[in-house]
Length: 124
Image (cartoon, rainbow, N blue to C red; front, side, top):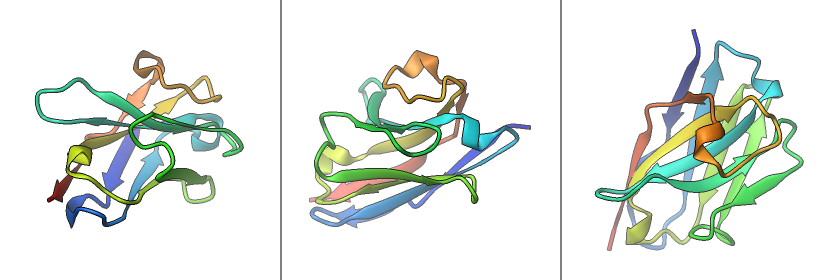
């Protein structure tokens, strides 16, 4: 059974940093690219970051570029997302997803598996 379980969300202050984790099981994690997406209230889901299967290639959405880092530990079947200088507009449910293509993509429809998300709320 495939599972993606996100953790690390919560209530933080503007300017804080946050590290999210997503633990995967039920598939060959090291063969999949991984991505993070987020969805704010009354908005469409948005690409945040992606990483290819071996961690050598990373991609970021414009909204977090320059203040976020995606990385993975294939031995632990875990992908991480670190965001610094958080803003109220970063408030959203953050989802991790797995893409069998392996190379990493911002295209949401190319992801095969999705987690249930973790809520991040940034107070001003």
